[in-house]
Length: 77
Image (cartoon, rainbow, N blue to C red; front, side):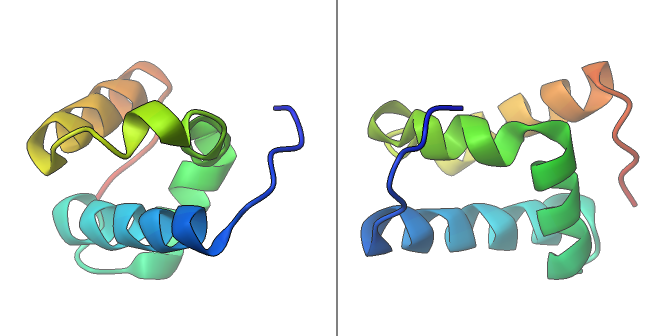
């Protein structure tokens, strides 16, 4: 990942990504959701491509996360 500056706007988006990921895949465990996003590389992808990814609807985003987790062996609860 290039060193993209994480602005407050990007951080607020990433907090939302963690919250919806936690709610849908990790029984509201935000620490587990953050760890999964970070270790799988999705955190960096969503930060780097914020300009595009923040426009995705929640259902599309969750579908993309599930597909990425499944194809990369990320265990969900």
